[in-house]
Image (cartoon, rainbow, N blue to C red):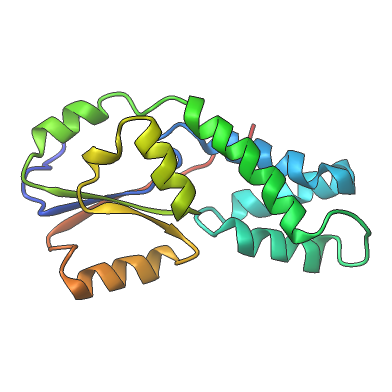
Length: 176
């Protein structure tokens, strides 16, 4: 299937499941981070993660501690975030890059490319640089703590995102 891509001034990309094959990486990291609370809690964390794709890890772990395991003793939010981040970083450095992405970049030399993700911004910038793909995203790599909506609104307002624009997102999340 061919897509009419040359008419867009800006192309925005979600990261997980679009640029990097990382949905399973993130799901497994949520499960492993929550596992000290037991398998049922870890599975509940995964279900919450899948149901709330694109929401930052900070909000997901806060929900986990407040709603899923509010009276349980275990790791605090900083420990959960640290364990999660270590697993995710390793996974992002090793998962597949979307096939054809370099070709798409070559076919759209006049379009500005941006990453707009729910993932941690600093982590994404570092991973993209290490993987040698940061330069493809000449408009920048953006993520949490800002929401996708905040990022898009801000970047339209300052003129980094020009219309017409196309936002590539994944429609489903593979959990395991």
